[in-house]
Image (tube, rainbow, N blue to C red; front, side):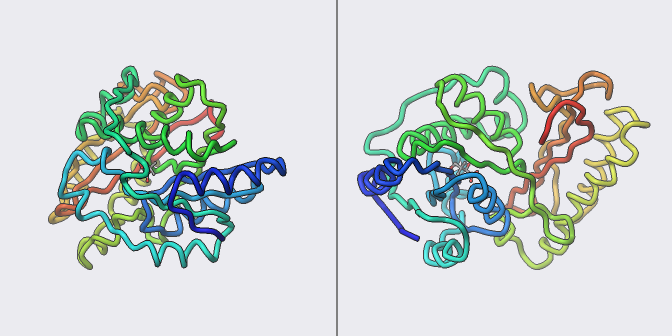
Length: 286
Ligand code: PAF
């Protein structure tokens, strides 16, 4: 496994591999790696000859400066972790390497960023698109792998790749969960022991709601999920939307479309956790 820090070194390394007709898979990350990332790397390793993992905490996607400061960073641990995986190249650039000049691009995601994360974290997805488009341009992968935990991010990246006509297949990968159900996230390590003990309530409530969802109206399911999680001390639901999985627009009725997903953001103290659950899927593979 090779660790490269500059775009030039990355391009030189990949050029050699491309001349050998190697198929390149890419897993963009912000580090603080966990088993969820491992599953993305594994999937990339199954589908591609070479796996590139980027580790870069992208400042332009943090609308809250404290969140950026707090974000966990430990490159040496991440390198040691990736050394045990199918990763071939780690790309760990500096901020100056990724943004030699300020990126002033404004992306148009249609209505996809008007709700949920887009509503509560203004500018977040523009920052994500800035960095992912730059990383795509640097790595030029054949396939790029993203977790379904960031459900809205995946929709945004798909749109960006389509709009920019990038010849990259965007591959969605399932949410990885701890035994308790808690979705794996780099932010979990910021939780206090008590918050961590309580955090599985998010996934457990979502799963429970799936069982009775079809019989209950959508608004009752929303009230159930929000009410149950807000009962936990120190936990507060920022939003819980039940949406059309393609358009991300809220649905009022279970018969409205074939693909329905519940997306949630919860504050556990100052730590913001997101998760989602599929209520209905008769039209999509993943
Ligand atoms: O999902 C993430 O970790 C980040 O948003 C990404 C895609 C690596 C861009 O910084």
